[in-house]
Length: 128
Image (spheres, rainbow, N blue to C red):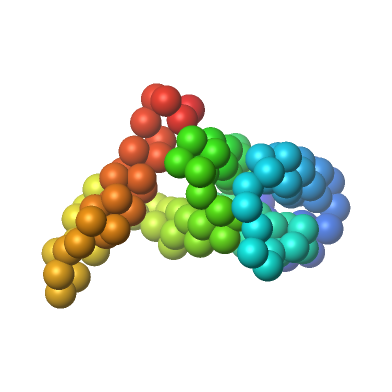
């Protein structure tokens, strides 16, 4: 049985190296930034790793979101928001959660449908 990743673990190998590697990948994506810093990127990845409790899953999520951000010409803030979303639904059924979100909306507009399509297709083979 694997030991749970704790906040203190994030300051030492192998977690620290993973966080640094993923943060550098985010920086190298050269997405438009409106106020986020390197420290913000690091915090978002640290939080995701604590949520997933799985370095491989964290890596897959960050890389999929970054690939999508580049393809869709999104901002670094969008990446941060989507990493929060991925952490939130970790362990939930993606399709059920996204359908529920649409069903609960007072009205569904093009922006909501675009977001639904982005999130539902994030782990399609194209982004793997």
